[in-house]
Each structure stands twice: as C-alpha cells, then as structure tokens.
Length: 372
Image (cartoon, rainbow, N blue to C red):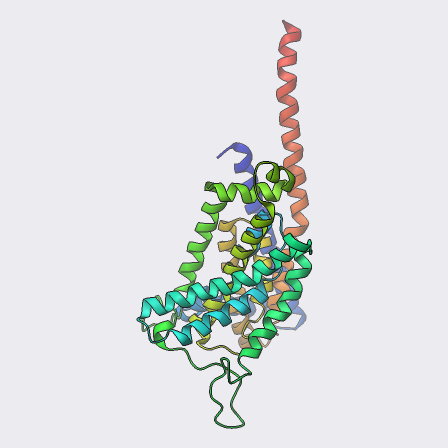
C-alpha cells in the first residue's frame, strides 16, 4: 500500500472514530434531557447489542440486510448511478423468495433453499434492472425511477398477501391476518449455532461473502474495471468499447439482486412468512451504511455491524431506561452528519498535502540544475 493510500485510510478511520464519539456524546446529552441516568442508558445499549448470546445474534441478524443493501448501493455508485430503490427491491426480492420457498418446500433442503435464494436475487435484480432500462432507454433519472419504484414494489408485495389467489394463507375466520403460510423448515436459512439463544442465521455469512465478492469484482476483474470506468467517464467508456446502455442495466440488475437478498434474509432467516410492511426501513438505512463506509465493501461490513448493534441495543434501551427507541435514529443521524461534515475536510487536506509534495518534487531538480 502506498504512503498516500495508507495516510488516507488512517484519516478515514480517525474520522469515523470521531463520528462515533460524537454520536455517543449526543446520546448522553439526549438521555440527560430526559432526566435519565446516562450510564444506565449506555449499559442498556451494550447489553442489548453485545451483552449476551441472544443480543449478539440479534445484532448480526439486523446487520445482515443492512450490509446487503449497502453493497447494492455502492455497486451502483461505482458505475456513477445513484440507486435509492433498495427498499422496493428488498420487498420484491423477499416476495419472490417466499413464493419460491412455498413452491419448492417439497424438495431436499439444500435445493429448495438455494432456489429460493436465487429467486430472491432475481426478483430484486429485475426490479433494479427496470430502473436501469428506463435510464438507458428513455434517460429517466435513476434517482427518480428507483425512488418511485420503491412505492410500487412495496404495494406489489403487500398485494400478494391480501389476495387468496396469490400468497395469502387460507382464510379461516374474519380475524385471519393478511400473511403467507409459514415456511417449511427445509427452506429456512439455518442457524449457525443450533440449540442456542444465539439466533444468528446463515444470512450473515452470505452477506460477508457478498462483500468479498463485490470487492473482488470491482478491483480484480475486467467487468469491475468497466464498471469503474463507466462511473468515472461514460464517454470514455463508450469510446473504449463498453456498451453503456447494457452496462447500466446489468449494474442495476446486480444492485437490485443484492438488495433482494436483504429481503430474502429477513423472511427466510427470521420471520419465516411474508407479511405487509415486513421491513422497518432496511432499504433506506442501508444507504446510510454505505455512506458511512465511504462506499468500500470492507467499510460496509463494519458500518453494518455498528448500525445493527444500534438497532438491537435500541430495543433494550427503551425497555430498561424508558427512553424512546427513536433515540437510535438520532444517533445514526449524528454519525452520518459527522462523517459528511468531515468528508470535505479530509479530501481538502489530502489534496493540499499532495499538491505540496508534488510542488516540492518538481522544485528539487530545478534547484540542483541551478547550483550546477
């Protein structure tokens, strides 16, 4: 690693550390405003996120969909696209996975589960590719397209559990809820630790493997080079032989597929059935995770674990200290604002140092020639 990249990495780590410290300070200040003991609040956050096997499992399960959505966002961002459609893609992918799981629950466990995962990826991918096609064919801004498709995707998912002819379980009485039948054990994501309070499932392993795969794709493959070239300069990419329209659709398909796996992990790993509004906003929080990670796969893993811990700890915080769980949203917001506020300073500092180093390197040969 070059000295410049090492310096940049250290500065980024320091900035994120400052952001976390500011978030904890903001948490303490808000808790004090509620006239609650600050120490008890921080202890509740810790106990709810890392204080037991159950808490750790909850943190990892909350981090899983956040990581998938963060990867979806950064893949599109590397291609110069801004996809904020993770929530809709999450819903469509999760719905497709449940439909496949119900259809294939008679197959042996690995096969039925794999087919459900593939369908979840394909469902979210096709929903993302639709926005990519609108961008490539009609030049519809992908921000607007993905934003509006969020509402359509959520509505389509909710519709499937409202109609008995689709995924709704048989109605036995007027009190029956709009939901799908319970998924069979063979199509659920297995727990990593059986017979333990730790409920962490295979989804976190798949999410980390996806992060590694995205990193390798973007940095070590020809396709990744073309994606980055498209993000830096679409005109140059086209002159180099890249079919920009096709690449946009493919990138959005990959991005949507990753977001679809987020919904798949929630439904096949935790809830085991499709219900209306099954996501508490993972599709939007995942974007914040990607921004905190500065759009790097490794950073996304760390940021997803942090946000997963905050979500898990927020449940304990509300129960133990009687502080609204919405305080966790304030903490997340402070982290994002702190990172955003310091990002410009980081870039400016690095640019200034690089300019000074380049100027010094060019002046030194000139001084040697003058003395000669």
